[in-house]
Length: 150
Ligand code: RB5
Image (tube, rainbow, N blue to C red; front, side, top):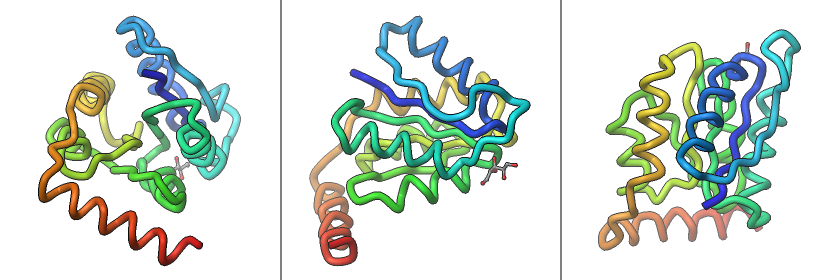
């Protein structure tokens, strides 16, 4: 599975830790966004990169990091076919997959610490979609996208 990971400057240090963690686990990683914590990088561009990599089939899952996780998760969710969840704990990251069939995990580097972030990443990548009643609801989201984003 290929994972695309991008951040703005606020998420840069944590992004590097996440990429290191993913590569040690054997995942292929695409990196986008800030190349330094010291040079401002717009979270909009970072979120667009994560979404584009998935929608173009270059990656199957994405991880999006900014200061709070709010801005970059909003950007990701403006793309048809992206289901991004802003998570603050491992349970939310697990449910993002199980109930929402999420394809992008977002979090805030100024909100969560490294250990929690890596636990959320693992939960997000290990968990499967539960289907059944949740498939109906995710299908409703897709139908809404079809209506709104022609
Ligand atoms: C950058 O200062 C900050 O605004 C950004 O990382 C993010 O928190 C936006 O939602």
